[in-house]
Image 1 (cartoon, one colour):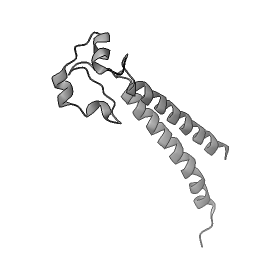
Image 2 (spheres, rainbow, N blue to C red; image 1 turned 45 degrees about the vertical axis):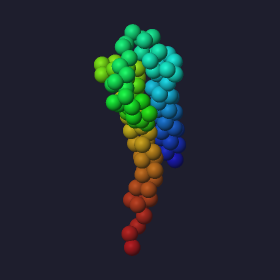
Image 3 (cartoon, one colour; image 1 turned 90 degrees about the vertical axis):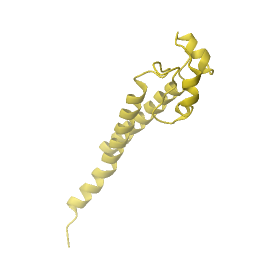
Image 4 (cartoon, helix red, strand yellow; image 1 turned 45 degrees about the horizontal axis):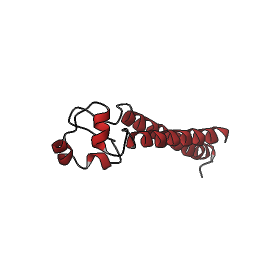
Amino acid sequence: MRTSGRLIAAAALCTLGAAATWFIGIFSGSSTDPKESCHAVGATYDEAYRATHWREPSRFFPLHNRCNADHDLVAPWINPTLALLTLLAATCLAVAIGRPILRRLVRSPEG
């Protein structure tokens, strides 16, 4: 049972890490105004591009908040980190749940 508890704790830590990473990504930029944030980092704000891709900043995953076609306010490490931490959390939970079930199936005598 110790292993299952450790795996559940690891899954919880991965989930907390993914949530923290998601918040960092969703609140990227120096202000709530994307135009102001783009100018703060020295990128040009393309209103036509933003109008064409208006759904992008509000998507849950992958996170993007582009100033134009070439510059994204969301750091490039955010989306891979989210994917990796989510995958690790799911794997830890699957193993934590599956190990005891498999153990019981192997130990139980078949009738």
